[in-house]
Image (cartoon, rainbow, N blue to C red; front, top):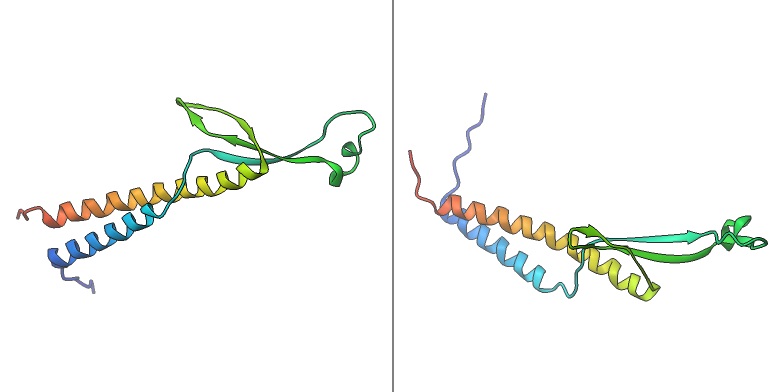
Length: 121
């Protein structure tokens, strides 16, 4: 037997969507910095004869941090300090969160449009 669900009242959908949008706005407002790209941590072997890094993995050089943002539609690479890498790690996470929140905002806006639109039979 198939269960039928009663359609929710448009007023309830509108109220819920507006509350969700408000929470999304508050979360976005709390974000202090954001940037796109990826952050890579690298450990390197220098290639100098006699350097311990070639035989001992614990003696390898680094970590070095490379940041790859998209600039003008192209991937750029920059080596950054450990301090800047710490800031970038958080900014990149914020950017990804902001993208998800923007998609959620768009979804809730679509729910609002559907709920506020006059019903056609």
